[in-house]
Amino acid sequence: MAQVTRIISDLHYGDRASRVASLAMLRPLFEDVDRLVLNGDSLDTRASATPERTATLAAEIRAFFPAHVPAVDMVTGNHDPDFSTVHSVDLGDGAVFATHGDILWDEIVPWGRDAKLAARLLAEQYGKIEAGERASLEERLAALRVAAAAIPQRHQSERRSIRYFQHLVRDTAWPPTRVLRVLRAWQEVPRRAELFVRRYRPNTQCIVIGHTHRPGVWTRTNGVMIINTGSFCLGSRTWAVDLGTDEIAWRRIERRRGEFHVGPVQQRFSLARH
Image (cartoon, rainbow, N blue to C red):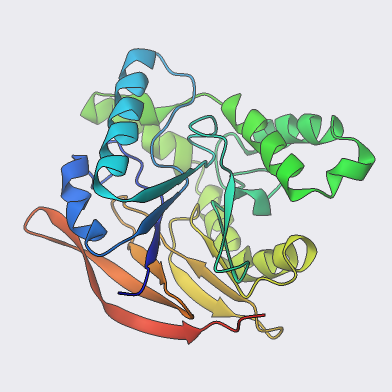
């Protein structure tokens, strides 16, 4: 049988907004999958008032996925910047590149409450990189993760329902102009991703990201395809990207009878082999 690599992202396991109440709900997603890429924000590992809970969630994830999938890449995101040392993955002999997507913005989360703080922290980290290394994607991703780790959890670690909702609104939707920042970020994704690929991965045919919680597929005039897999959070749709021997496909993820399943293939794209 053909080898299948599946990419999903933004589980946000442990956050009240996540639809993943238990990791066991994800088991149907691993049928006939040889390799799984968790493309960032699997959980929140940043500083909080409950570090013991964070450690428990991290231990669950580290034990669960390797027990159900032959190979797992746990890529970091802005919420789990220190969860692993893997910040991106090249797949299909370089035809496909997967990274969380927050590197597209100097503010990391340009719509968020901590956008200004993130921009300052990231500028400080980039400033420590020698001029010759600054063009290195690996160096930039490592610097990004150091900056992201310095931003603490906010509503994500709140366990009380009412206070969680109050803090969620404050952190993500207030003031109302923050909605405009979200819409602007969604609009900017294709252009920013295309420029990113052109600079750092010129031979890549497809870049797979998450981060913005808005799934989509965009093909640019230069032929580069951008796929965003959405998230497992309430209010967002969830996609999986499957990479086979010579093609890439995306599928919706549906929740049925308390478990997550992949739906039929929505689109397929052939990959040219160099």
